[in-house]
Length: 613
Image (cartoon, rainbow, N blue to C red; front, side, top):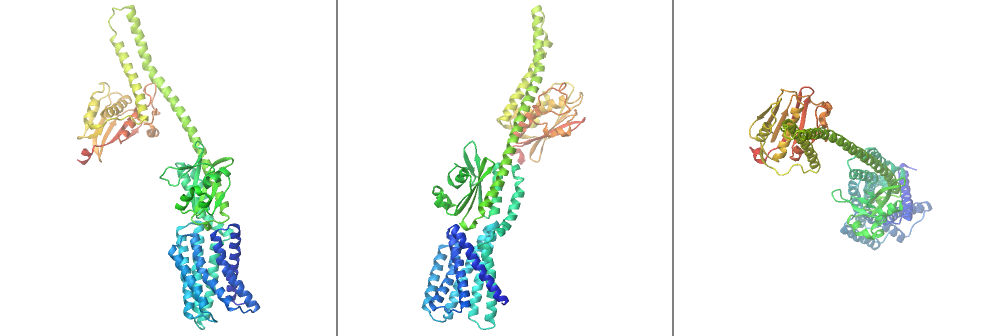
């Protein structure tokens, strides 16, 4: 046996094997695509077997039988076109044109009966078969460009096999019209092309399971590697989208994941990330049925099998569906839905792959549920801690002035009872007023903190000269051990809530006074810079540890070097300052060095008029 004879035998054997495989699949799943595959490779297998038997037995077929075989071969490109339409969509005009050309070719075959056919007719037949096959190969190539994963590789193999099949037809047709040595050379080239075409068809239409797994492995490994980090994504929707992308890449189809909502008793599914999720009841549609029955469902005709959603399937061009429940133990978490435009995108083994992906999705979603549960527990513990801190701080800071007020009032009461005509104790009354004001300030801070939580701290705004406002606030500070030096550089005007900006400056200046040693000044600066109003309050006090700077503007937070017995406060002042600044659209931060003082910076947006100057 020569090398060319061996090549011919191999290619013919491959066509017979493909026929047996696709025929078996058709018996298991009687879809139009499997029928077209069976017809296409059945014709090739029949021609191969018939020619082998005739050669082995030395039979001479009657003319009508030969014409029938040729007619069957002429039918091949039309069946290829139907296969293209099974995997993607072929324009109607192409289908009708190919049908007319097929009928004309068959009619011509019986018109030109005889031992030999006219060369012009033979060339027309070759042009028809090769041209339509080339077109089919290009359509399969375009389908591969739009696909991914296993589907992409299958389409590429089919495209290559179809184009090589067309070249084989061209070589055979041209060789029949030539004499040696060109006829022999083209015959040899045709045999090689035939073998390569058979291999391409085999890999595309009947890939063995181990090859499909090898094609799926890279995408599946990427999916599994990515899965470990998915539970840490910001939201469940982000996790679902990543799971969908991984499942689509691994299967070469489209994917959607629905998540079970225990409160609603429905499956939430996001068809459009920008839109609200749709809710599916258990038992409805394929996703609901798979979830309720807890088994994988497949449909090659979803519009027929789920008439309630037929319009949606047709609108989305869904021709096949696999739905698999996502379950962790006995806990139902959701459903994975794979869908494709045409049924042959899926193989019989894709149900097992879908289940594998669903199991991995269950691990990810269950991990996220555990993380969310732990976060809720931590949030509850933090809320409890903050509540306890608040009650402790409030009790401590309210108790001190209240004790003073009560004690002083009782003393004045006893004094007045013993000697009603005695002159008023002015110092005692002043002490009561001072401590009552301190109580009032603490209560005001608590109320402001509550307003801040609701986003209602800042109200009406109007053009405000910050330099003038800061100067007025500084002048109202009590004369004592500290002086407040104000440095205003030019007019700084913006639209602000003047009352809250005053409160901001009072808090910052009072803090600077509180934590600074006697006889040290507090310096306040006001100016414009880069389209913003800038304010700084600088003291020469005890300073703030660097580790505390990120949290000093938090609620109830105080620096770790603050002596609560010496410096009273609940840790709300800077929290309220940050709220005032941020509700104005600005920023606040601090710089500090232990023992050398602190500088608080405020940046506020200017009004449009001032920003343009």
